[in-house]
Image (tube, rainbow, N blue to C red; front, side):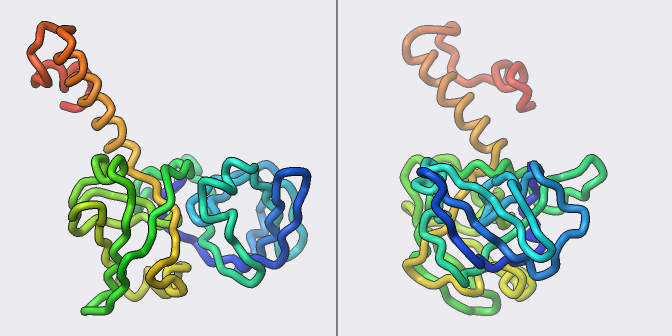
Length: 220
């Protein structure tokens, strides 16, 4: 579990193929002295396991499914990625709960600077249904607040700190980013959809989504 607060950037130093998997050799800007083999690190929001490390880089292995369904499959040597180590029991939760399990890839449809940098990101119809204005979303592992939602696009606003300390400074229109929808939002959507379906087929007394149902589900 992560928070979406990026600790630092890492540079892709080498990419190796191992059977159908790929091994990423990543050099953090400042190496962690207490890093351990087997621990989890979010790389552009994707939860990966450290399989090896040396004095200034660590190695993570990526399976074919992850390569196909996230931007990790398109990484190139010299590219920078967002890094966040997993939560500990005494960690501050400054962002929101992020699992490191990507829902889909979005495409940056617009990047403009007004007062802050505004990103518009296009996602699928199914993803849009689960997003909420002022709700949370992880973009390449970064915990961001959704501004507006229109059709299949949502906007996020980046303050200078977020831009300077994440890989979004290098992203432009047309680039793909990893999207993880807030876990609570997905849970509520799933529960309400199933409740509606049960009502349509006559299960549950045909009352639809009531206060009692929401309370029983733990949402009230």
